[in-house]
Image (tube, rainbow, N blue to C red; front, side, top):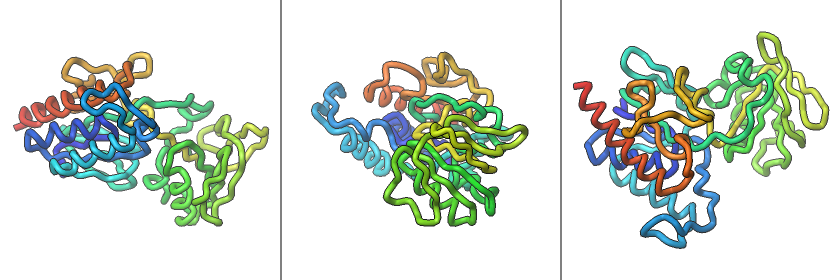
Amino acid sequence: MPECVIIGGGPAGFSAAVALRSRNKQAAVYTGGQSALAKAARIDNFAGAPATGGQALLDAFRSHAIRSGADVADARIANILPSGGTFLINAGGDIIEASCVILAVGAAKGAVLPGEDELLGRGVSYCATCDGMLFRGKRCVVTGPAADAAAEANFLASLGASVTFVSPRQPSVLDSAVHYLSGAVKSIIGGGYVTGVSLSTGEMIPCEGVFLLRDAIAPEKLVPGLTLSKGYIEVDRQMATNIPGIYAAGDCTGAPLQVAKAVGEGHIAGLSAAAYLDSLG
């Protein structure tokens, strides 16, 4: 069991992992979707590394975390539940237990779809590898800009679900078993459970499951009871949230959305998490 699980493979998450390892604590980083940093062609405002590409900087952060002894996995996190002094983390369908958690999930983008909140857990999911087995033999719609969205759709089809992938462009890696539709999901339909989705084309697709694959999951959907302010996680100077044992760092805590701020907050969160672990005895 890792002592601390870090959700997010960006500068804040990897910085937190290095700080934890410097205090000889076990740290596991779950990267999930692609970090926004990877899309930056050139960064000039990170001290000591001028004119560096975002992907190159991200690779350096990841390599440093691994060299320090942190475990890194590319699993998508579905939810985090407090459980008697520890936390249960659903990582790609595997349940991981940890004594504390650091949220470095980035800034969640994209408006909540009509019907999404009401039907979450009743046909709406954010992770096919986590919840896919529940939809074997059922009709499912997969949509979203995450880099692994097509792979998630393929996985869902491999389980025996009837899958429709909705996107403005058809991914080249989409399996032939997955039906592709050009467009965008505008709303999710259902009473107690999902019964379909409406598209930007005006079409309605009947289905029992909707998988929304975004690069960053809204933090309040990961952790029930987490306090937010204007859509960002509220933290104190030690990067502690309102839930004991859960810390947050980086873009998910608010502006400025800069690499330097993310690295600094990640370092503080890692040290604070290490002190919290020491306090547990």
